[in-house]
Amino acid sequence: MRFDLNKLEILMEAVRRGNYSAAARQLHLTPSAVSHAVAKLEAGLGFDLVEWRGRELVLTDEGRLLYETCERVFPEVYEAEARILGGRAEKALVLGATVEFGSSVLVRKLRPLLEAHPELRVDFYFSHELAQPLLRDEIDLAVDCLPHTDPGVECAQLFRERYAVVASPAFLARHRVRSPLDLERVPVLSLDKGGEWWRNMMGAVEPGRRPAFRRVVAVNHVRGMINAALAGYGAAFLPKYCVLGELSRGRLKALFPRLRLLDDRFCLYQKRSRASREKNQLLTRFLKGLKVDEFGDALT
Image 1 (cartoon, rainbow, N blue to C red):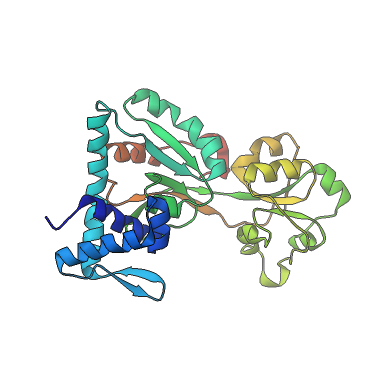
Image 2 (cartoon, rainbow, N blue to C red):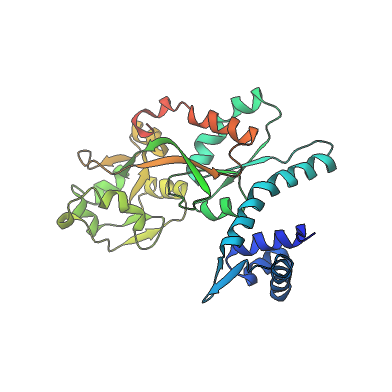
């Protein structure tokens, strides 16, 4: 037989990682062992499966056909193995999501589905980076507001996420902030030091009135930014649904209420090769019908 399952798995990992060295680290092999496995597959088939463009691994047409077939078949092989070895106990579905949305919305909303379907086991994976974990099969589905552009991934639109610029009353008592340009003079909180996190506010402001941030306090977690804003560290740009309680109680104040900030769209992403699986479809139907009325206009 020309196909060796172990070598096919090595090829899949090399494609996902983009090079032999990264695949070798993941598989606990040497790069030469990975290269040798791919070469053996090519020799058995009589076709080149990969080619190199500089340091980038690229699939040939034959390699793409084989890889896409493996993407469809191997999940079923893994599931059959788990059921045979585990007394029909199937592996949990891994649902990925952005950190704040996953921890504050999904874990609460998903419970009725899991109670109604005890056969559906779900693990959670919360991260700001979900595209690569989805491609590497570390997660089965991803709820994300960043686009996933791989052609092997399908997208289902869920709902829009609105934002707010906020600051604490104590901070506003010390700093006069009436327009976006005033943010040049005060500390601002951002997920990144360069302030790219604020892009949806910048896109809503006329080019001549966009502030050039001079004092950025980087906080790499949305919940951390909320607490930092409450403590008066600076003005923050945050998903509105995260701070509805703080806004209603007056612990934070919304700035620039007349400015129509750009919003994002949450989408559900999954590999096309897995979308037809029964449990993927069950979770997809539930998430597409998810009711978020309690968040008002923050999630629409």
